[in-house]
Image 1 (cartoon, rainbow, N blue to C red):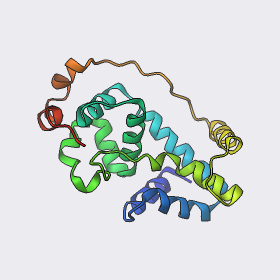
Image 2: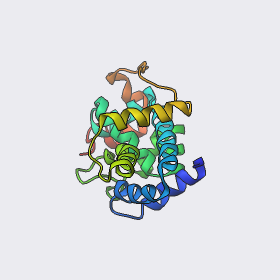
Image 3: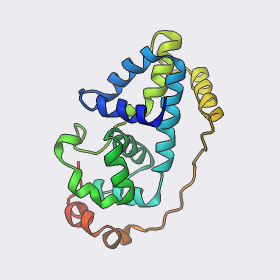
Image 4: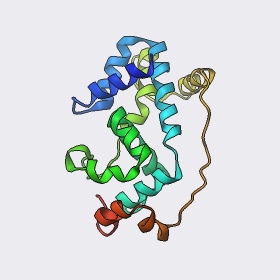
Length: 182
């Protein structure tokens, strides 16, 4: 699977109520290698979006942002498609123009936790017939995407403090600083 096909799948999945469910169904029909490719590309985007600046923007949007919330936010961002992903990565303040209640989750947040497990869920479904967690299959999938050259990103050096966010993101702050989402 090339990056173009990955983004095409993401775009098509946006037409359905549950992106993760639709992607799982489609990927399961494509087979293990396509699932591994999908997960590799997804994880590359998760790594690329693991930045201090983006985390600061998410913090402003939601009035705080834990490690898990930042993962779910990045899953949501990838789920918005290539154009939005690239615009936000270039300038997180683009989120002011983009965010509306139609593209937020049920609780009113820009988060998509389910998208994070599409690769593993589909891989497990193909191997076992269900999507129940399996430590061995998780390790197997991680090994397969690492063989493709995925670089792990585990640390982030913040270049901001909470007090800096208003000046770093004046447009975001004006809309969400006093009244964050959720």
